Length: 78
Ligand SMILES: [Zn+2]
Image 1 (cartoon, protein in one colour):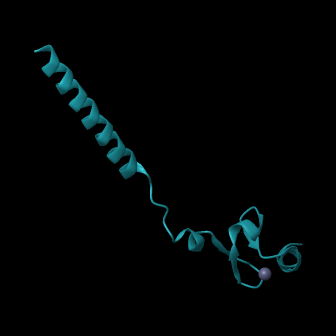
Image 2 (cartoon, rainbow, N blue to C red):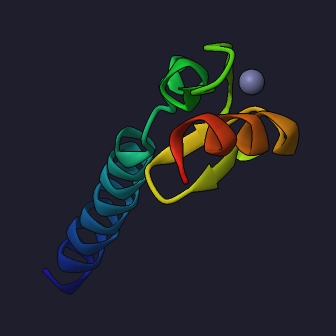
């Protein structure tokens, strides 16, 4: 009787380990491949799309370079 309990407990343990591994594999989030397009922003001055991390962002205004930021501010701010 005692031996049977140990075997059942061992089988249960193996079952739980396998279940945990399957769950953790399933829980790994897949990285969407379209993140690059989501991070593209448009320069206000020349309307060129550039990666957000390379853009110059001042408030709500986005530029591809410092020169275009200056040019745009010249034309839109007094
Ligand atoms: Zn630009």
